[in-house]
Length: 153
View 1 (tube, helix red, strand yellow):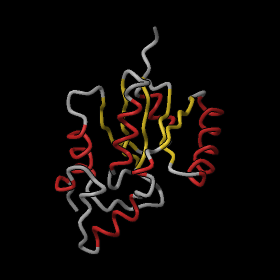
View 2: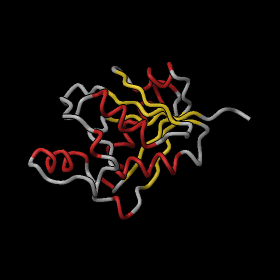
View 3: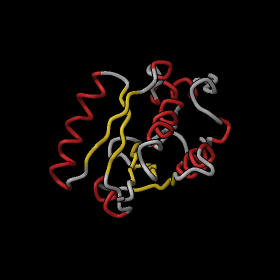
View 4: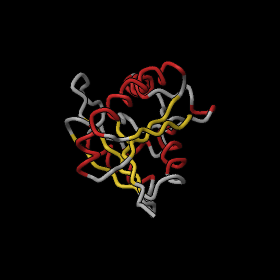
């Protein structure tokens, strides 16, 4: 049987409980998940890259999950880490519209299939942009981010 490795890309700034739940669902489908902290050409990270990597790694100890950072096209990172699939979580139809176009382009360019998993209803309102805003304004983000104390601004 072929080894199934998935690449879960994102800025994960921060890695929310919604992201965490997608990885837990995904690990039932894949032998390994590589979580890729991508450098987005139009975004400046709020939380430090190394603290985001340490934070995410702390959530998946003793699981076949690896956390890396990368720049450039996601499909190139998939090729580098020998991932046959891209894993994405969907909260709503807006996410689907956006992600479908990217998935089709990735499939055309590199024959890498994207697997979409639905976010649990309890996590569907969690949005990393909003969580960052709450943190910037001095609010408590622990309801939305496991082990939030590990993140460094």
